[in-house]
Image (cartoon, rainbow, N blue to C red):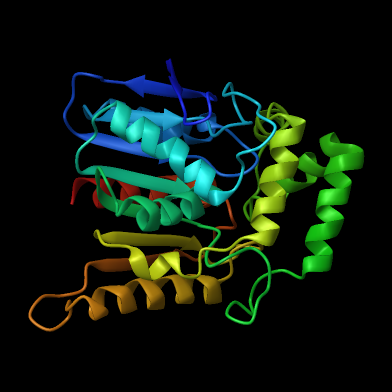
Length: 283
């Protein structure tokens, strides 16, 4: 593990394996967790010789808790510092939940610098909050209540969020592991990132994806609906078509639904997800 300085001096913890490898995969966790959520996928990739790069977003894991910088532009800037600092080229970037939204903003702000393929895993896109363009998002009032609960009883709120991750039964120990991971995020970072998901969206960023993309979502996800995955696929494909794809060459966008999975697609149907994930990384 190393720390990398971001644009404002924030220390971003970057967990690394197989640093000598030229085949890189960047894993960006979701809210309110840390890189540890990718435990199974990291093991899978490391055993196959991949350079695995797993940052903790600011305010989470062991990265700096800062007073500001939790908007999508700032979080994308943190990722740029990681990719540029490690001189990654044509890496596969995989983002879960909010991490997927951050990578979509990265595609807009940095033109996909250093990324050769994008994997969106239950990505919070086009946005968590309901808008005219995203009628399938959640009511702002409900998100306001969630943020209020984070401010007044964060331990109970993140425990509830952790339990809503899964559609399939999990052991109490497994649930406790996820809860502790979420609780380890800073209080300020957890709240400010939630505010970002309420107030910002990545509707326009979807059409700026300029590398092959894979969308994976759960059929029983209570946060990212099938309809939101439809929008992701539609808009990414639309962006490629505007750049001339689909005439003489196929649009490089694929989509998969794990029918029995909730938001935690990497854990509800772990074996199926890992096989699919690894196949998409290798391609």
